[in-house]
Length: 388
Image (cartoon, rainbow, N blue to C red):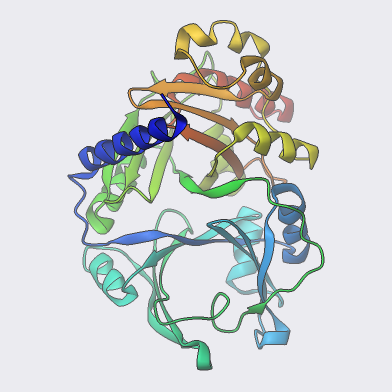
């Protein structure tokens, strides 16, 4: 079978499975995709340098004193369809500093691209969401205008709705094009596949119900402590998705175990619920991971014996197993195909936020067969930190 026919078949299978999965999602809140993810950080300039150097993001836009922003500075980085915003306060006090003092560097805003930000706010708030930002028109002269609105979610995490159909500017009003002579080449990251939230004990169902009722999401997968456990720790997780499948939010909570789980460790150091990791897609995970390692990104260690019976577990794959073993890349299969994935170590000083690199070859699942190996790898890191 030619690669073109195989890819078309994979696409058709994916579209069919997504239709089946999301028939029960009430799409009163149509989402076009992830617009941007904003992190509050202690030093935006230095964080931008890290994400450019290590992750291959490109300079995109900037806002600060030079653009009329008096209280904060933001650097916008872009790679294919992924847009990161790194924001630091320019003054003492205020909500940015409070967020950083409490959580360390971390995700504050997950901005969702919508056709109508006013309707999005109305639909979610009338269903019980707490308003963060009423629909606000932001004008930018000849570039047109953007309308944004927002709601609170778990912890201090915010969802903004961004309507930019009448806007031609670089990013948002008060931002200018960020010109830089230093732009390391991209590493092959394409788009955000999903974003995982950690919540406290017995809070998973509460927040899954929030996404179902307030945002019209459907639960597509559920994992309990029998699925996600090792000798020492356990957790539970449910995956919520919007109607078109472009936005997927797994929600994790701790489960009883002999020792402190990764979710408990996260909540202890983050001081509450928040975004645990951002999963970013690539079309060539070997090339992406290899380049990221060359640039200093640290990944979790996977023991070589994981690969001893790999083909028996997952069936035939296109990739060379020895190459996957060299990089510690995990593989899992579902009814629709297989996926390859690998997780970085935390990218901030606190053991909180990290990234997942994922390549899907038909599979629509989340690597259930890798959970034991993954969480044993995380436990080794916890043991090194003395927090297991």
